[in-house]
Amino acid sequence: MRSLPTRRTVLGAAVLAATGLTAGCADRGRPDSADAEGTGGHVRPDGPEVRAAEARRPHGRTHRVRLTATRARLALGSGVTVPTWAYGDRIPGQEVRATAGGTLELTLANHLPAATSVHWHGLALRNDMDGVPGLTQREIRPGADFTYRFAVPHPGTYWFHPHSGLQRERGLYAPLIVEDPREPLRYDKEWVVVLDDWLDGVDGATPETVLAALRRGMEHGGGADGGDGAGTGGHGSGDTPGMHGTPGTGSPVLGGDAGDVGYPHHLVNGRTRTDPETCRAKPGDRIRIRLINAGGDTAYRVALGGHRMTVTHTDGYPVEHTATDALLLGMGERYDVLVTAGDGVFPLTALAEGKRGTARALLRTAPGAAPPAAARPRELSGAPLTAGRLTAADAVRLAPRKPDRTVTLRLTGSMARYDWGIGGRQYDPRRRHPVTAGERVRLRFVNTTGMWHPMHLHGHTFALPDDGPRKDTAIVLPGRTLEVDFDADNPGLWLVHCHNVHHSGSGMMTVLGYRG
Figure 1: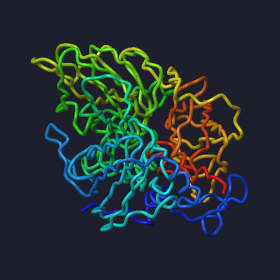
Figure 2 (figure 1 turned 90 degrees about the vertical axis):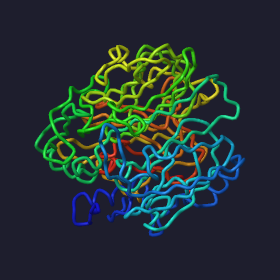
Figure 3 (figure 1 turned 90 degrees about the horizontal axis):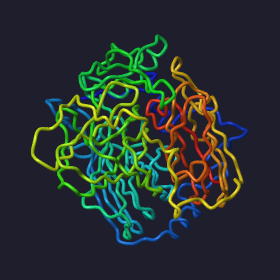
Figure 4 (figure 1 turned 45 degrees about the horizontal axis):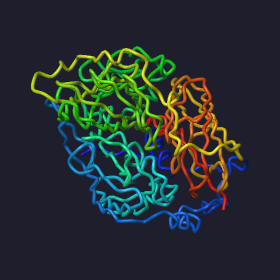
């Protein structure tokens, strides 16, 4: 049985910080501080404003699902078997589908030895269903269950995972596909592709031991990553189970250092590159591929050998169709692409950007041998498409409007001290940046650090500059500033955080609080 972290460990403190159950003094200035009841003049997650917003959403047919979070022993392929935590007996967990305009009701039974939760990444849902312990709900205790029920107004590619400690680094994640009842795209097949970097259970590693090693090892320097036997590594972490080796090459696309952690495996739909999943189709089939990066520390450069991809959506929202050989996904980002299948066997390859590992699946439309596992499609050699090169589709562009409020979030910390935070502080759920319903809000991410950060806003989507795409997760490069706008139309208390699990677990999170 895996031992759980305690309050007496450095890592335990990080886990408690990530769940929002930390102690400390409230800030008396801006951002706002909460009062003793935790409201501080803000809308409560289950308050009348939240209930009213939910009542205005369409509530069509209810889709009911039951899931169990449990300890499991899972086969990743090529003889690799790991003890981990999962939704049932598979990774990713059972795919959940709902229809836009309907209602999702999911009951999670917690058979884990620790409390857990479910966050619905990318959904503009009611605040008390957002799944952030210590902020919007109580954690689901071991042996208990909880039913999440909410309207799903927007179609798109989403996913769900815990917001409890470092649990997302285990196998607790699954895709959520919200289908459009008036789907405008035409295609013959659909392929949901979930990417992940993996080390839980490898040589005794756990997410907690890895974060503890990062905090110790960063002070002594070190490397980046490999994968699937390529010689893995993490900064100063060569003596940590599951982490080995030498630095990666870094990434100019990401502004230098690509990541902190060495992963022995990179997965597509829970499979290693030497024992890949295969999607079967016919030559000429038009295939919609829904790409989800569920990784903890790795951006992926993705290409389908022998094919051009047409990007149609990012983070659930349509964009003007854009053709590319390859695209880049930061942690938490999603892209939908269309491809017309060729004749043969083709690798869908996800290169761990700036690292040494790869994940792979196969598209097969004909008999014949698959390309070798180490083969790298030529489509990966050019510059990958990133979100800043996309334009929002006309139907989802924000109407022109000057912002009523600008919220500046300074991303702070360093790899040497591993003191990631926002505004020089680690996460405290009582510190809230106030917004008011009806405002156009500009989020100004100022990255003062030497690392890139995929920043995620709960409960909303924002627009990138210059009619850029609607997103809920966007990459902020080191030393750069990114300004994004959103309409404050979903009352509650909403997290903003880095989707690098080790950065958020160390404190790079804050709260936007609607004023009551």
